[in-house]
Length: 458
Image (cartoon, rainbow, N blue to C red; front, top):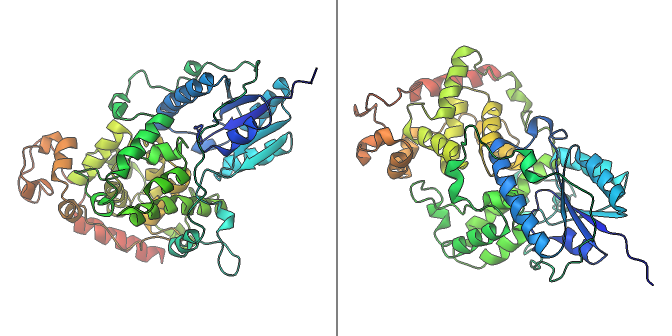
């Protein structure tokens, strides 16, 4: 009688899917499969998964568990340091080989290296369009500026066509015990601040549905994505961040359609930010340009009060307030408004970009380490590839330019009765209702203060 082959372990992280999942496919070709997910709150330190994404993770793992069970594969949940728990699980199950997708967050790179010293770890591409170290300059160096990176990445496109989920999986008959998902308490209860998240459908099926819905409206994407009132964005970002759909699948579904180049460039930006944090793992905490280390950010009670008002959508600037309230209610914010809200915090309020970065990390369902840090540094002007610090977005002008009246009415109900001409600047037009917050600072005053701070840094 032939010996039963040892089971093979698949370590899931931000790749919670069965389709176009190279680690799962490779494991399925070797022997009985055990899948695992480790909730590691220790390795990431201050960058442990945020509150909004914990809600998403609960539902995404529920969907993954269901899909795997239908194929006879157990999903083992453990909590602790990832390398320790995966190695312990491998030992308990008699696993000789572990498969995973390569990730580029500094804590995941460290966990992969630590695990590779204890078990045979096979790392696969698949989280990005192309592995960052494979996109090189003519002299063999790494890119730190997006435009040349994007040109080089396009030379490697299209990515390989996505492969469907394995038709048949041979699940291990026995698997070590794991945690019950409910015991992780990922869902908020007292209070349940996630009631407004109901429009999202986490999981692989939800990701496929979001892509299908977007493909039919990709044509006007480059124009519509800037208009908050019509929400022309894809709503794919949390699905991509959790790996419920591969970027290759998105690329092949959209490429060749009218309007596709502008959208595919945004998918390329995701690769670029992973490329940058791969080179600069401290990028979420340190200015990309040391010259800004001496910039005199505001601190103390007045700054704290302004920050609190910003988080609650009480700045007196309707477009900023609408975005911050949308974020708190739904776990998401329109991309144009993200830039306006971030710029307001950094330039008008002169509050350190890292405070805003951490707020977004906790409240966004699509919080991505690379995107979050690079985008905040881009807006602040502190990044290696960024908008100049002196380029200060005017929220009132941006609101009118991008026709945000109906967006403001939706999220700032105290302004809902104002007409289009007044709603963008109700205080300046003498139309602000008594219950609406007064501006924390005037635009000109905030701009001059920011420029003065930049001059001191120089």
